[in-house]
Image (cartoon, rainbow, N blue to C red; front, top):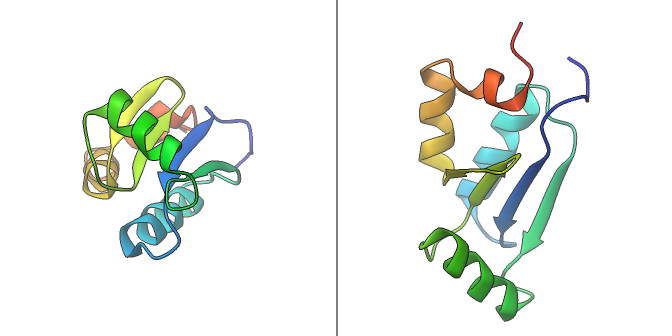
Length: 91
């Protein structure tokens, strides 16, 4: 697949198995570039994430301007066939 997809931004931390799973799924779906915001390195980013999403856990994933949610939410989108269209990669 091409790298011409909706931008993906993910709040993440170094030791987060759910972040790894989410990143792996996105890669399998053709996403080659993810803007990763490390909340473990910058407490201000964690505060920003919580203010934006109302959630305290990582990952928090945005595709374009849409807040997808966390890892389970991402997998649910994929399972229901809604992830590729959201990424702009629908065939």
